[in-house]
Image (cartoon, rainbow, N blue to C red; front, side, top):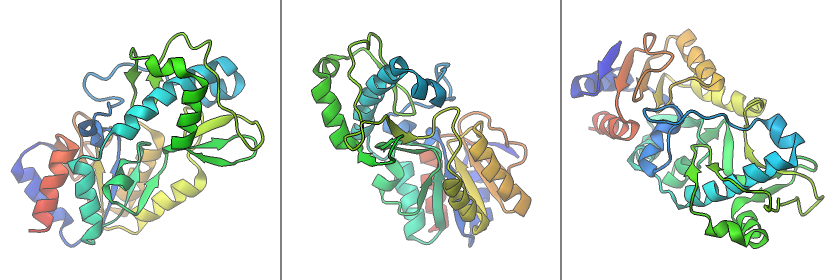
Amino acid sequence: MQTQNGSPEIDRAAELLSGKLISVLTGAGISTDSGIPDYRGEGAAVRNPMTFQQFQSDPGFRQRYWAGSHLGWKRFAASNPNDGHAALAEFERRGLSNGIITQNVDGLHLRAGSTRVVDVHGSIDRARCLRCGQYFARTPLAQRISELNPWLEESTSHTLNPDGDAEVHDVDAFMIPECTVCGGILKPDVVFFGEFVPPRKFQLASSLVDQSDALIVAGSSLVVNSGIRLVERALRRHIPLIVINRGTTKVDRRADIKIDGGASDILCRLLDQLTA
């Protein structure tokens, strides 16, 4: 059922969700109020993200990626959770939700206070060595990158992307950080195009959906395969499906209620209704 952002639809969604344990699937649209751009929302630029194969096989691609990722990380680290993230943390605290499955890599759900978060596409706040598997926290790694590339700190002409990357040019002088354990290739611990979601992550996400009585999709157009697969699990179980997103999604006609609006605003209003 296609609806507009109005109180009757929120009332109806609250009625469907009342007394049910809710799992939540979030996408980039929930973080736009934190200053992080959306992939596919209105006004989003067309992008051709780097593939894992490019990153792994070509040092030039790694230079470009790490330069952009470094600047993007600094912007991500300076972003704060918004009211939508806070509302979902409150859903958990009040026992309304069994957890969040997020397609975002920004870590804002955890910083907002949610504790049961499955980040199916990884998190930009850590990196992993592709040779030995050692993990590195991003903050000290960012300090090392700054020391290796002091000129990059002066760069102001770049555009932030939703995955923590930024468009940077003239990176031939960029020095790529290496694993301090084995000298191997470091990669942010996020799922690149051309990679699969780790099976364990998808199992955890599936378990949340399977153990819930309803599913809310917030801020996702459901173009990415991992998201639509989880929604299909909910649809097969015939549990209520509420979709909150600006613009169309792939399941608008199959959702019990589609609310066209901002994720933060609608989630806050739903929380008010469910806890009144």
